[in-house]
Image 1 (tube, rainbow, N blue to C red):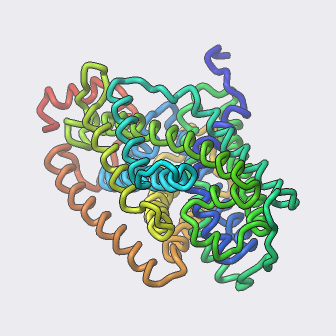
Image 2 (cartoon, rainbow, N blue to C red):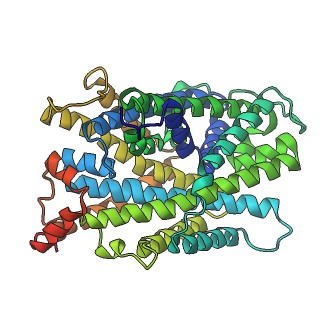
Image 3 (cartoon, rainbow, N blue to C red):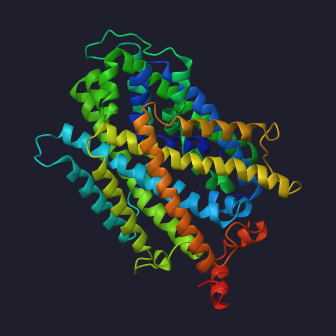
Length: 469
């Protein structure tokens, strides 16, 4: 047995939980529960089931192309070609992550301004100060928060579980409220809220890169990600029941920081400070990971000639400086756009959800295409039931996009923003692939060539031969 494979099932579960849970999830949780009451738990279970189909599809793709660092980019390159790859990576991954990180920064700023109101600075200043500090730290190549990221994740989900249980059994020090458990019993309305619940379960697939270091990866990687999502569903369901006892549904719906409101109503100032500090650590950790990780991904995409070469250039600390600066600036922009506004935060979360949903649809399509093209290729894991689960995943995700908001005006605006962005990306992709990568726009890349792209010599050779500009 390979001695480097030391990680077990528990490690995969903890990684999955840590990468999924975030303070922005609590905004979606508050929006959903505040709209229909505890029946939002039903919508959460449906969204969980759909996300489990995606985890299964991504596990099969990882089994077909193990040890690849690009993940969905390489799966889609082999399955569908460079055009959808570029759109899904820039739109469904880079933009979505920067947008969601900006929302996280906005929630952090609101919480800090509320808790430390005696400091006379506007809430957006908290976001900008943190963003600039983390940018500088990353430019110097110091990943100062890497060692506490797991701890922060445990603190956040542990705090959610403890506070949720205290609220659910009515043992808080705050005043309980009397209100109905259910606001809306219409099953159609409940199902339409799955689009809001979707945000609670995205990101578990980020555990895939550790699969090469996991014992019995065939079983433990898919199972660990699925168990992680299940744990999150249970904890957040407990939180909804706690919300019912201590926060009026309408106040919950309109709060830009439900975790802060809940902590205060449940345990007074102690609960408020508790959730502020844990949330702050979580946001700092998330933003640091985003600035560091996305800049490296952009560097890798530039190495594949999918982004301008300036993203590949490094400073004297071996840091891809341009990516760090651009990503930090974009995070600051989205934080400013959603500053202290529950509507703005909710809107950007839903826009990010659509981008992520598109990438998940492509993952299911990749599975179906590669099964047909490479039926005999070895796979250590295969989605059971033939094409049924990927097709259910595609249909369910399309349904969520079509029902991304219960407000028709907001839904149309979300479609407009994502549609215009995807159209702009499509124009960029056609130009870039044709004239810079010099590839057929819609022709898939052979699997062995995609695997070869992992080697830095691949790009050097193509440039030396004049294939790439």
